[in-house]
Length: 275
Length: 275
View 1 (cartoon, rainbow over the protein chains, first blue to last red):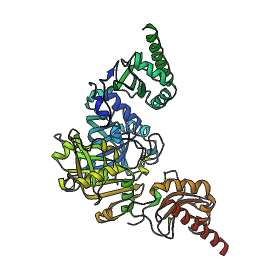
View 2 (view 1 turned 180 degrees about the vertical axis):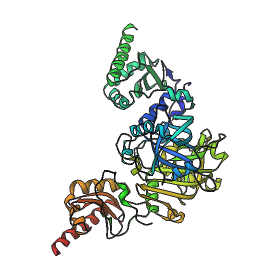
View 3 (view 1 turned 90 degrees about the horizontal axis):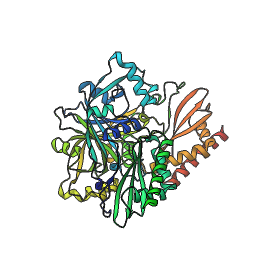
View 4 (view 1 turned 180 degrees about the horizontal axis):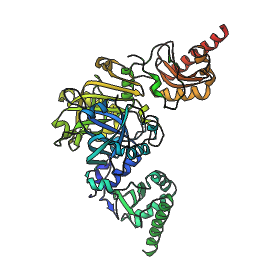
């Protein structure tokens, strides 16, 4: 996966953008997609309506992923989507992390994922595993998974579209989708970002100045923390720009994020002493 | 629209349910659908993929409604859904108010709406109105609405499916959808519910006991406030049950909600004095 055109991420009014500085490994789109699917447990199912025109029909569908990264749905025979799927197995599941209503966030900056394929009833022999996979993603189904009108369905994924926000999008390789692991630090990332920006702004600025090839920087804001490193937005007299700094080793816990960011800050200070 | 089977709203473990007590006017599904569409500004568009199978494809689509309650989209020629619509106009737009990730809310208890029809480019003569309708729903589009690769599209709605949660669902009449007005107190409803339950629980209990035909009630919790009245969940030795109490007149402001609920509380107290 090549690096995306970052300059699309800004509103039209933004000032001059510098070439992104990308050091070290970034999460792949497959990894981002699997992370998103591990974070969001309600998808939107698109099926083919049973009207004459065969119009695509969108509906809510909580899901869990099974061991093969296939979405498992628990749906009612009374629901439109189930009746649609019984007539035509083609469908897709959109998984999106939207900003809250009224939060003012830009929805098109949100990551989202479309899993495209065909859905079928889970065969009897595999219902146990599928049931567990669904319940792991959607505990509310415990209230109805064993009702007579609900059945477990599985989406056999044929293609995967990932859109990470403005300017980051790709069709994800199927094997990469299956094999990728969700980012273990995603549940802690928002807290880490808030902490770094609130309490360690000076250290972050030093990092982009001395490690991120932006000696002119006057501000640096952390915008992403993942297992491999962190993204920052730097601004200075030369313009605004994206800086990616790598951790020494992949992290998987809040303590490891802390150790890795402390190491980056130390290295930035030492780089100053040497210069 | 007939009243829905309320007993589906509870988990399997719930205790005995009493017959709902529904006094006065409820919001119609058309009104609930229009209210939802006025509250949520990002839909999920289902289009027909340009693959051999013609698989339905879900994607994010911020929208605004025009004067005819038609969704207006602002979409890029670079996006899959636009390329899909140029090949096949059939589509639907799902609008859902989901519980936040990690909130623990049950997604299938969420209201949602599917607008089914065909999308086309807005004709030149109508672009001004459509542009304003889109921007009213999605102010973020100001950053790209005039970009060369973005165009305004309009969904000509042919059918409307509303699901209000467990046990409330219908196909909404098209004229009713067009003519319904969003509930003016929806933006204040959550605050009013919280206030009533936190500070006026005794008054609410009196209301269900004396006005809501539940003299056995021991607890009463407000679950919904709309322009026409309020829903409560009452529990007591006889079981749990739904109680709907009407306001004297439709309300449209926080002050009017207050006046209307004070009037209900007074009437409940007076009913006690008379008995």
